[in-house]
Length: 146
Image (cartoon, helix red, strand yellow):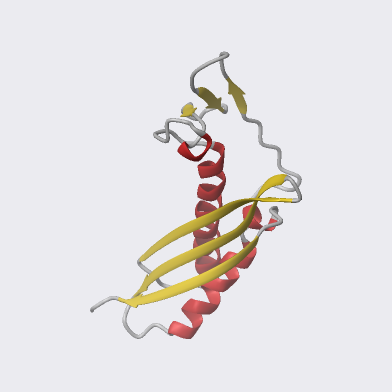
């Protein structure tokens, strides 16, 4: 890992009407638009969906790193995040995230250790740590068949 601080540069560009293009060096461009809840088409990534997706992606990446450092064997992970957007004191903001993590582990794996590492990953997620919304973690451990 590179030393801190890290810098990330993203550009969003648009015309008066239509979709927005989000770009960063060496990455494919993303077409975004307002979500259906804000009278957008609902068929493109929106800032709201990108933020919620960033939380899910960050939890998975955090788990991978923690599991690797802990020499913990696992086979699959899925992280579904539901973000609640509300108005508090006339400010629109995310107020809560429900993080649903499903982790598949080999037989003879300590489910307690798996749960502990999943909790650590959620606590270590730099994206959710950068947000003021609270989060709830729901962990489901699946033991694969031999």
